[in-house]
Image (tube, rainbow, N blue to C red; front, side, top):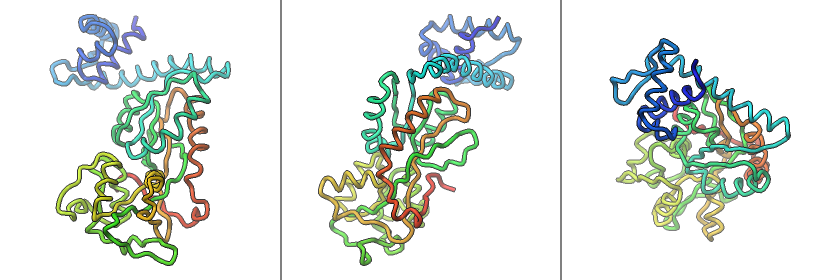
Length: 320
């Protein structure tokens, strides 16, 4: 009879697309894993994987069964979670992905509070791009992801945490025209001086959308900046002559370093990105997710400028 262990081995092969790596992840030998999968295939009378291909891929029938294995394993893991919830306990591991443009500013505000409030939760955090988080959620190797939304993906559920407004950060060697309130208009910015993040970061897409530019934007400076972090981007801008678009928390850090004169609010409808915790539609560890959302909303609530909420413009993270 098929066993849960065999389901787990099959899912490991599907995830790693390699028998050796799957065996290592399961802490068993490769011959043992291969033997157990052969027994499972004999029991089901179905070949799960095409072993002639590199990397290994599921057969058409195998892909259908693997999805059912995921459902079975998910519900089995849910039993312990339900027991803990009945006891009023919030405990266990939680695998969280977060995009790099949020990690250095949001994590220090949220994680210490969450750990203090829920010491029995083991939160495991990775910095990943939006595409990587979406892929890992589908593979069920992440429980949740903090990123910019909306994603418009029917397989995911989004829990909004806060709105983070965008501002302009510029080099001291360039002057930007401002209105009477010290704000800049996007259509008056010197776009030939715009610096952006590298491909793969949603902040790049949001910046180009705000400035009404296409893919050619990164070529306006005469070179392509491969900035994988906000720190690199800000350092390049500060030593200019350039400007960029930043989320509010990153700008607050610069202001704390005495660079407030180089930060300008944006006139008109205040552009913002929605920060959300994203999970699969069918998820485990719901109690941990709810607790994490509560702590994050409380910690990040000061980000929102309530005075401009009615005159705000959401900027979507993904290219249309």
